[in-house]
Length: 195
Image (tube, rainbow, N blue to C red; front, side):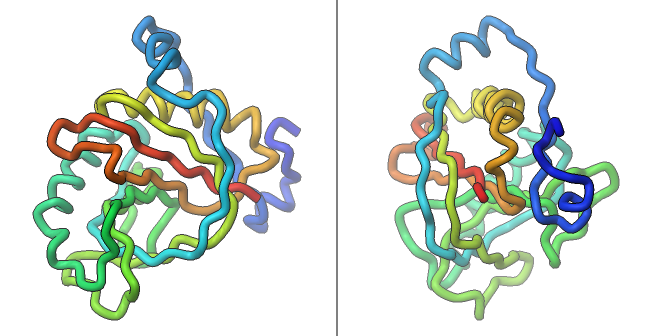
């Protein structure tokens, strides 16, 4: 009842059941809510998209390790052929067929670029398909160092209240011209899949 899904539907994988992140209300978090995030998302539909990048498995809260993954991606992104321009993606998913999930890790993360084809994936990189569908889109504003507060708000406050409209699948961050990769400041959109 709490997640608006029957045990049978959950076992069949028909509906996502969110993992709520314990929320602590510090002064910094409350300040972040004032201007660092859109409290209510916009809703949109996206076409299917292919992406290639570097990935690994992580524990919830491993933001420093994910930052290291982005540094590796920055060094190697020029190797990706047929890459689209204009933005990069940070994709979070339960699993990936080519990435072994480490002991105690809860999710797989891929720092990647959209591509036209998955025919030529560089050695040590991984390809994936983001499915077409509806998404709730939140916008993080400010330093990337505070994106953890945005993620905590989305998964600790918004998602538990809207679990009936969630869909199992990857969620992702979209980094476009509004984000400066040198200062690590700007705006980042976070897409949550919807049924």
